Length: 251
Picture: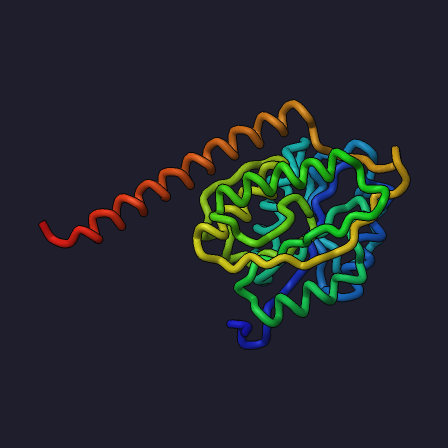
């Protein structure tokens, strides 16, 4: 159950980079349920922030250049904390997430405010093959790095984070690697990480726009998985060694 006297204080968080044609609708959907939505403009070049309505419940923060999705989320978490919130409900700015599930995420957070809630995508027939492959590839490494934790999707940007989680973890990646790293580190530190099945809309083939940068993001993902996998291996060796010597009793 919730640890806060009056329940968790949740605000919306939308990292924005060149999704000016959809961000206003995403923010409007969040504002139906939440008092405040923080939009972190991560160096957009399409004038997207200008499309946001004048609304006292919208906090707009600008990065002077594109720093990456992870950096935008971490900036938004800091702003949310400074405004007295305990949790952020993150949605991508491209309108692919189902706004009808916002109450589902909020209810799950109110039931357990120590849980990290991660969307698990229910693909439609328009889902790109790259997204399907990326999910399978990412889950192979995630299960290896977390000892087969039951989550089924590490790359969905529809989430609720307790802000206390950011204080408990070391500095993390600034780009797409952040989405995976924060989940792995949360599991390893004993946080509850729970999946919320949710539909996604990719539109017709050719309409989906991805900000994934194949070269740099694949390099960062490779480095991340190498580091986390070695950490998992070292822990397993340590646990096995301790169990071996414990079973032998005192010398």
